[in-house]
Image (cartoon, rainbow, N blue to C red; front, side, top):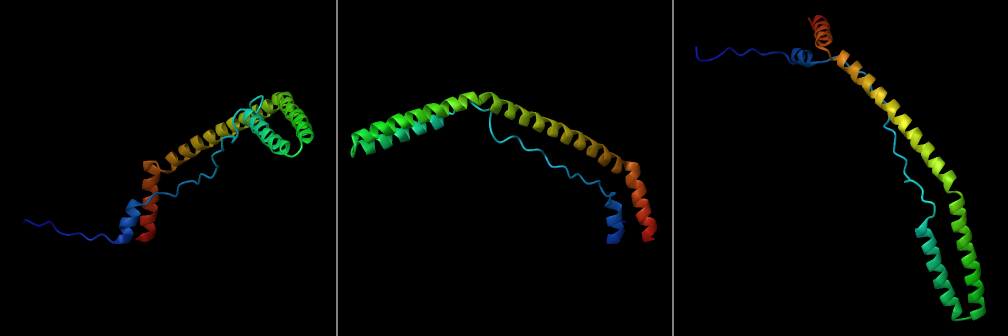
Length: 144
């Protein structure tokens, strides 16, 4: 006998033989990392851009009126110094806010990790060989 007999298995029986119990759902969203980096005492890019803008404005105005350009230079310099001083004074508060945000993120990440471990254990239980066998037997009983 050179040929084996062909056994046709109905598609529904094949589907039941490969089926698994429904897995529990996992819905928690992964917490997002705080967008901003650790705050700096002074935003140097901002201070330099304001200084460059002030120089440009003073240069343009000085072509028309020298006295007005000197007044703009004095007022602009005072504004830049006050802005830098304000940034320096609020650094401690901004740093504390950033640390609190980072701590909240770490707590959310820890909670997410616990939920994921719990889900993985529930999934392992739901897809254990004995549960799969029982589930398939129940479906076969319903089919036959």
